[in-house]
Amino acid sequence: MQEQTNPVPRPVPGPPPGVPGPARQDTDPRAGIEEAIAGLDELDALPPAEHVERFDAVHTELAVALSSIDKV
Image (cartoon, rainbow, N blue to C red; front, side):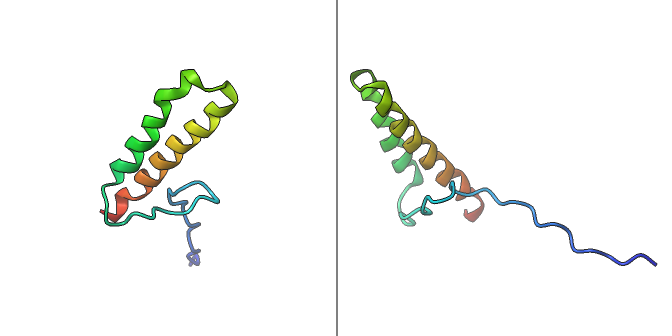
């Protein structure tokens, strides 16, 4: 008889490492996404080096929103 082994735990989606989880539990998660996307409106006026920070903000908000889907 073969002994059962414990399965390897599967990763669970969540915010990127070092990024705190969603702070706004009682508000619409789309608000943070919309705010971050609004920051992209001014990209043409910013130097390219500052674009990364704006895109990171959008990516973080999307990751947080996606990680909260299972908690609905």
